[in-house]
Amino acid sequence: MENLSIVYYESLFYAMNVSKIGKISNIAKPVLLLAILELIEKKYISENKIYYTTELKEEYNHIYREYKKDSIVTPVCYPYYYLKTEPFYILNGQTNRKTPSDKFIVENIQYAEFDDELWILLQVKENREKIKTIIKNLIKQYNII
Image (cartoon, rainbow, N blue to C red; front, side, top):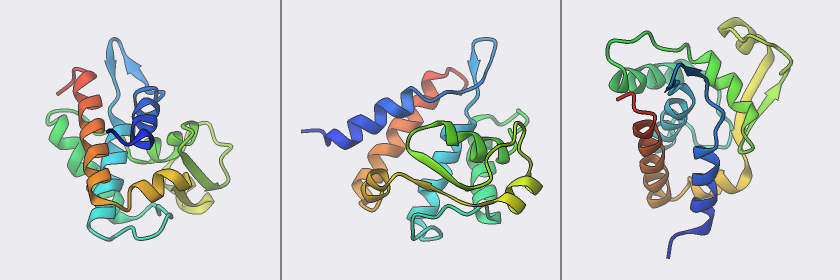
C-alpha cells in the first residue's frame, strides 16, 4: 500500500503554484525541490534548515540545465523565496518582498524548512526516491523536457 503521507505530498506538489510563459510551466520550484533532496542525500543538509548556500545554488543550476539545456536558468533566489507560498515550505526571516534577490535573501532570510511531516518522510531513502520520482514526473508533465 502506498504511504498516505507520500500521496498527500504528491497532491501538494502537483498543486504547486508555478509561473507560466504561454502554456509552458516554469520548472524552478520542482528543480529546487530536487536539488534539496540531492543535498539531503549527500548529507549537505542534515537538519531541517535549508540554507541559501553555494552548494544549493550549484545543485539547482546543475539539475535545471539537465532539463533545459539551451535555456536561461531561472535564478535560484526566485524558487527559494516563492516556495513560501506552498504549505510544506517555510521561510524563516523577513518575507515581505515582492521581488527577491540574492542580496535580499542573504541579508533577510535565515533559512527555509519543510513542515515536520515532510522532513521526517525525507529521512528515509525509499521515501526520498519516491518523492524524487514524483517531482521528475511533474516536470515531465509540464512538457518542457
